[in-house]
Image (cartoon, rainbow, N blue to C red; front, side):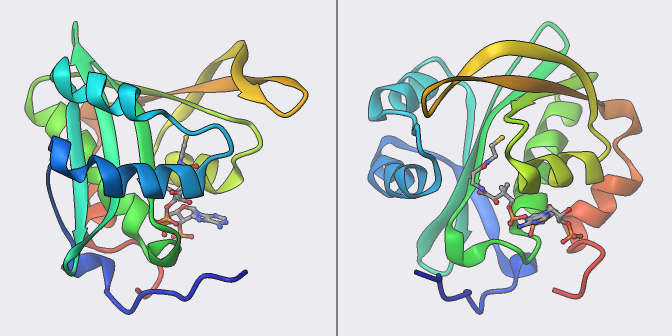
Length: 175
Ligand SMILES: CC(C)(COP(=O)(O)OP(=O)(O)OC[C@H]1O[C@@H](n2cnc3c(N)ncnc32)[C@H](O)[C@@H]1OP(=O)(O)O)[C@@H](O)C(=O)NCCC(=O)NCCS
């Protein structure tokens, strides 16, 4: 079934810290988005260990979330997910842009993430932000009938300039 597109422009969305109270809404988005979703326990652990956990505020509801760990000069984007009705209008670009800004502003030089080779929208998003593929983790993901590799992407946060402006001001398409 097609999902109705939201009328909220991505440039009007804000973000804030995720709390335990958000986890019901977060899990709803997660289970709708992924065939092999994270469990409630994984999200709880991310909060408990102090990972950077942010939710996207769209009107009075949560429109997505991003989770990132930081340490030893590197940020690792662990999950970025946008509610289906908010996709395709610059929301994901802004969400990951906020995370990368936090990483750079707290002195981290590199951002890493993994993505399934089958996840074309995510690959195009990351490459449009300047991420470059630097390796493969074989059999990293659970998949139907076996395992799927992960492509490892890396971004130089010192060079996160022009792409940043586009990410945080709405992207190259009219939004
Ligand atoms: C990946 C995801 C976060 C993208 O969010 P989004 O809000 O739709 O992305 P945006 O509208 O900001 O698009 C940014 C760029 O991503 C790419 N992109 C996004 N959706 C795309 C699609 N369906 N087809 C092709 N490219 C797409 C484009 O390069 C786009 O730039 P453009 O609009 O200037 O052409 C979203 O699809 C999602 O939540 N997917 C489910 C969870 C997931 O797979 N997360 C990533 C795990 S690694």
